[in-house]
Amino acid sequence: MADTLEELPVYSKAHAFTLAVTAIIARPEFGRNRKLRDQIAEANESILANMAEGFEHSTDAALANYLYTSKGSVAEVVARLKGAQRRGWVTAAEWSQCAALGGEIQRMLGGWIKYLKRCDWKDRGRFSDD
Image (tube, rainbow, N blue to C red; front, side, top):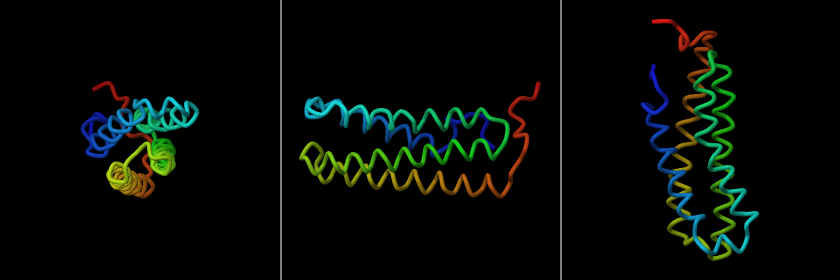
């Protein structure tokens, strides 16, 4: 098991995804619809924040719950970017890249959740005095 969240490949991919989305929503076009920009920004921020918060919990079940939220946030970002693409603020190629990376992250999170459900450790050993 990884000692830090940053060691996990899913975290690296999610980090790259959030950086790409942040660059997209920084464009002036998104200033026309602050509500949409803010919704995307909040969901985007939620991805890594929930992974980090869940990673600090001591049980697999608690971590899995936070990963479900992260997974849902990825889906929300991709869906809202699709709306931005329909408005012409995001190109089809940009949306496709985000959707592909988002799908990969969702599959990775889903696999991690399945693993956690199977193991169901009650004490992940993150708080030992070693």
